[in-house]
Image 1: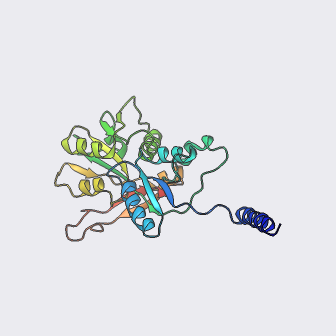
Image 2 (image 1 turned 90 degrees about the vertical axis):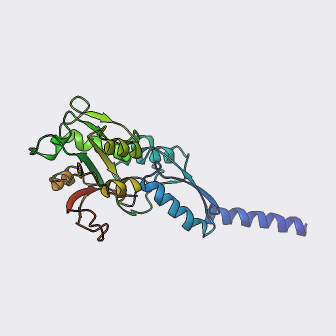
Image 3 (image 1 turned 180 degrees about the horizontal axis):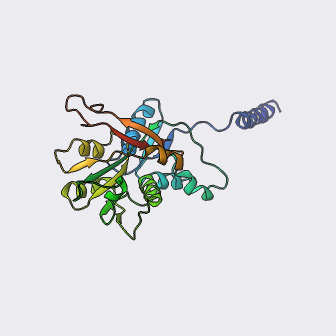
Length: 253
C-alpha cells in the first residue's frame, strides 16, 4: 500500500508539473535559412555555431527565401525561420490559427538594384532602366521576388513590357556580370558574398542604382525603411562604395 501510494503521488506530481511548466525545451531545432550564397545562409551558420555551444543542435534547411520559409514554418516542416518584413501578409490565410510568432528583428536588409549602363545618357526616372530589358527579380517564393514585383508594379513595369527572370542570386549575378541580362534586384545584407562581389567589381559598366524616390516608396510600403549607404562605409581602403546612395530596406525577422 505504501509503495503504491508513493507511485501514484509521484505520477500525479509529474502530471501537474508538466501542465504547469509545459514540456521540456527541445535539444534540436530545424532552422529555415535561404539560398546558398545569400545572407540568410550566412546568418544560419552563425546561429548554428552559437546555439550549439549552448547545447542546442541546429539543422539548417536551405530554402528559396522568405515566402518559402514562412510556408514551411506554418506547415511544421521547420521550427524557426528567417523572414523578410512584408512577406507574411502574402501567406497569412494559410495560418488560420496564427501559429507563427516573431521573436525579434535582427537588422535591416537593403534592396540592391544593380544594372548595366543603358544606351541612353539621360532617363526621366530610374524605373526606365528596366523597360524592354532583361531583369532578374529573385526566384519564386523568395522575399526578393515578392518585393521586386511590388515595386515594379507601382511603376507600371510587368511581364508585358519587361523580361522578368526568376533566378537565384548567384545565377543572376553571374549573368549580370557577363552582360547576358541588363539588371538584377537582390534583397540581402551587405555581408552576402554576392553583394560584396558586385560592389567590388572592376566592371565600369556595372552600377548600383540609388533610389531617388525612397520617401514615396516608404509611404506606399510601410515595412520599408529608407537608409543611406555612405561613400566608403563598407571598406575605407578601397572606398567601397565609391559614392553615397539612397536605398530601401525591409527588416529581417
